[in-house]
Image 1 (cartoon, rainbow, N blue to C red):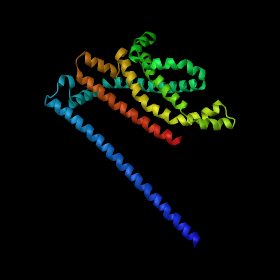
Image 2: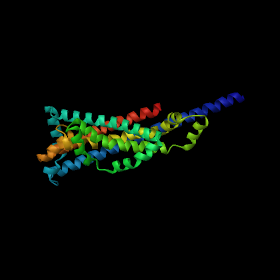
Image 3: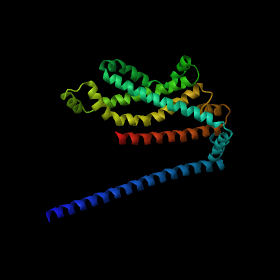
Image 4: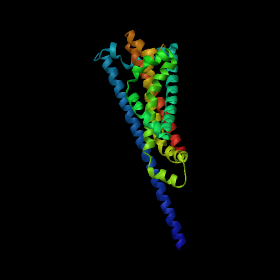
Length: 278
């Protein structure tokens, strides 16, 4: 009787946990749907107000344009094939700058953590370089690498590398010292401390840096294209200003917003995958 009562109690407890888990999942899905709906509603309202303001001439349409005109511009350029080389070039530069910046910044953080002497030497230089306006470095990169792809990627790296280094290195320094003491107690060396303590503890910070670097990479690429590009979305913005075609400017900004959002979502999915694997 006792065994049967115990099994019955375990069964009831398991059913309760399962029911609570299902309820939590339903509530989570409902919250996500509600958030997405409100986000979509806000976007529709903003676009509608912008369109109405343009149609009613509440705003200067020569400067601010309006959505239907912007989307016609995008459709026309996409249909003629003029748009795709600009998107392809900017996305290529952004992805390369994003990957190289994240990798180089993480490796530099590991290097200065590994060598306390190097950390002390480089610390003031990193602070000064991080505080510098990166646009000011653009002409230097143009002189060094010429006006083209390499100079734009270099501008992007000047933004992403130091930020990644500072974030990841700070995460290394904030790791719980008790874990390090445990590894040392069992005879572990610096390599063991890094592989078994520092890297796992800093993994969330490294993954989160990916999301930050998406925005920074786009900033670096667009700034670089402002300076030297002859093709790309940044070039389209500058050209639109030069010919006073602000519809083209807004069309370029809309495309940047859409592509950057897609890239950010890909990084979010990658983050979830890596966190689950970790």
